[in-house]
Each structure stands twice: as structure tokens, then as C-alpha cells.
Amino acid sequence: MNQGSRRTVLKVVISIFLLYHLAAVTILPNGSSMIGRKLSWLFLPYANPTLFNRTWQFFSPGPMSAFYLEYNTLTNAGPAIDEERPPYVYPPHRKNAALDDFYMRTLAGMRLIAMNPANFETDFIPFLCRLHPEAVKLDLRSVMEELPPIEKADPAGNFKDMSERTTLPRKIYDCPGREYAPSAPIEEEIPNEPVNQGPPDDQ
Amino acid sequence: MINKLWSKWEEFFFAPADALPAGVFRFLFAVNAFIMYAIRFKDWRFYFTDDGFLPQAGVFDILPEFYRPAISWFPHSAPTALAMNIGLLICLLLLIVGLVPRLAAAVGFFLHVGLIQRNYSVAYGADFITTFMFFSLIFMRSNRRFSLPAWWRARRGLSPMLDSGSVGQLLSSMGVRMMQLQLCLIYAYTGLEKMKGAAWWDGSAIWAVVGNQQIMFIDSSWLKHVPLLLAAMTFLTLLFEIYFAVLVWTPLRKWIILLGIAMHTGIALSIGLFYFSFGMMCVYVLFADPVWLDATLTRYLRIPRSWLGAPVEV
Image 1 (cartoon, rainbow over the protein chains, first blue to last red):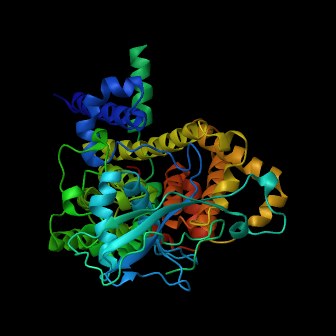
Image 2 (image 1 turned 180 degrees about the vertical axis):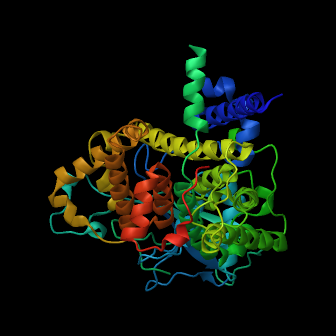
């Protein structure tokens, strides 16, 4: 085989790989489409381990609202609620611009895990419990904050003032491996946090 | 007809091009990724061991079945996770200076993907575009210019590294095109996905983005007084993302890239996605005219010509 033919064969071989790769990264971001459903078997073995299966949905279909978890710890001494102290927040709110993207990563992680109730209970709750060695239970709820439509925005207010807070129902989770032996009974009615307020300060 | 198509295909994917854009892309990408992963390294135990919120047993449970990999190589112990993080940083350092860049990109890709497999939940856009950049650099001859070897050769008066026509040259051209097309795909998909959202249709999406207290840096609530500006920014974002894949191949390339720089700078400054924004902008270098890039680096940024190495096609 002469140099020219060898080069052509090489180009054909490289082109076949290229077509396969480009097809994978073009089809799989819309993997739930008919083409994706029919052809994914061909591309998933290549794209799933290499992360080429990514969907590209930055701020789409719509920008997400602020979403975080608020919780109080319950100890064997009773509810560890201090009227002066705001509940814990996860991830703790950040204040300033920073090169450290720890906050963005924990936010992404919390959102992904919170979407899956099974993982939330098996993985995330034990993690929060580890942050509070004294806790035997966590009294937790999800909080969302949304801005009003721009037409209804308070002309004098800042974003914090304008945000509308929505809380999902509270749930009490057991901290695994920690025995519940209260010296004082845990009260059934733990006061709800006031609504329509901005998030508490950083932890 | 087939011959004509094949010759167009060949010209697009395999034609040699000056090595400067690939070299500058390699450098900028590696600097950005090095800073990002050096900072991530500080919390490696939290991200990649059972000290964090994702124990090893649940690594793939968080993923829908569709996305679970058939094979994986994530670290199963803390020492392995530590070694993989250090290895990744070493690969990025090698890429910064341009030493064994293809090998460094291949090993870096392997380590990077392995670490993401360990904790998919803490990965975000910056990590996912990094995957594609590593992958494209496996093919690119990215150290022929703007690298330590190129500088050294230029300083010693040696001829530039040349081996045009080999497999390496074909792969290098392909790697550049692959990354350019990937950027087009990312923008096109994210633009089209936005069309499903009511906030993007009614022009209020940017209001919701800049007003999200969890991610915003500065309170820009004054924007409520200029709703038309917010709507214009929303629609301009949509138009940019959807049409980038077409316009970047036309004489409007310069303008669409300037618009992209403005958009990503805005994203970086308003919500702090520095690494993602800078990473996306790194790819723009691959669209730059090498002559213009050479002149910009030497004349305006005052980078000594010897640093760039002699012009060479790969």
C-alpha cells in the first residue's frame, strides 16, 4: 500500500470513529426522544462511562428557584430549639463572590439527592446527622424562594425583601445508630418558623 | 457527488492548520481547570470518600438507570481518591507547560471521569465541559506552539516540531473540529431546551436568574426598573445559543464570539460561575484566526514571540 492509499484508509477509519462519537454526543442529550430510545443501545456503552451522555440544560427549561433545607436537631434532652437561634440551613448561604466553588458543588449535590427520596433518607440524612453528633432526630423541611413577577416587584425593595418563601411540610427523621432515650419528651408541636421571611443568616 | 462530499469532509476535518490556537486553548483550559481542581482538592475527603454525603455504596443509585455506566473506575478507598486527585493536578500542570500533552490529556481524562463517577452529584457544568476538553486534547497536537518545548526550540534556534501528513496530524485536526462542534452542540441544546420554558418565552428568565439569592453575588434588583432591558437580555441569550452553531461558521464569527464573551462574563460576575464561564470562553480560541491571535498575543498582550514558537501547521 502506498503512502496516499494508507492515508486515505486512515482517514476513513478516523471518520468512522468521528461519526460514531458525533452521533453519540448529538443523540444522547435528547435520549428520551424516539431516536434516542431506538438508538441509545448503540451509544450508551460508550457514552455512559465517559460522561458523553450529558444533557445540556443550563437554566432550562426555566431558571431554578432558590431551594434549600432547613432543620432543627432533636436531642435526648428534648428539642434543641432556641427561639434566638435560627434553624440550620443546608447548604449554608454564601455571602460573597469566591473562587471556591464548594458552595456550587454542595448545592448541586443537595438538589440531586433531594430529588430522590430513597437516597435522601439513606445517604443524606446520615450525613446531616454526622454534622450534629448530639442529634438523635432531625426536624427538617424544604424551603423554596421565588421572586414575584417583575410587574409586581416592590419598587423600593431588594431581592431579599421581595422573595416569596414557600415551605414544604416538615418531616422528622431518625439519626441512624443513635438511640432515642429522651430525658424529656419530644414535644409534638414544634413551633413552625414564621413564613415569608428571607433565609436565616449563614451558619 | 460522493467524491465531492468526501473532499469537503476531508477539508473540514483533516486539513492542517496553524498550531497556535490549539496551544493557547490547551494553556487556558489547563490553567482554569488546575485552579478549579486545586481548590476542589481542599475538600477531597468530603467529595470522594464516605465522609461526605454520598457513600460508596450509593454511587450510582442517584443516577437514573439510563445514565448508569456499565463500567466504572472510581476510587474505592481514600488513598486511591487522594492519588487520583494528585494525578489529575499533575496532568493539568503538564498541560499548562505543554509537556507530553496527549498523554497528560489521556491520563487526565481517565482520572477526571473516575472522580466524577465517584460523586456525580457534586459535578456541575464546569466539570462536564472539562470532560470534553480533556478528550479533544487527547487528539490535538497542542504543544507545537505556546508551550515550553516550543519556546525551548525557538530559543535554541531549532526548527519547529514537524511531522505533517502523519496520523498525528489527522487526529490533531479532528480534535480541534471535535471541540468546536461540541461547543456548538452545547449551545444549541441549551438554547432549544430553554424554548420549553415559559420564563424564556415571556422574557423574564434573566430576572429569575439574577434574583436567585442562592447563586447571585450582587443585588441587582435595580433591574426591575428596566424590564425591557431584562427582556432583551433574555431573548438575546436565546438567539445567541440557538444560532451560535450556524453563525460561528459565517463572517459574523467575530460578533457572535464577542456576544458569547459578554454573556459568559455576565454569568461569571452575576452568579459566580467563573470556571464554567472561562472554560466555555477558552474554546473560542479554537475559532480564532492564527494570524490575528499571534498579533494579539505579541502586540497587545506583550507576550514575547519566543514564547509562541515559530508558526507551524499541524
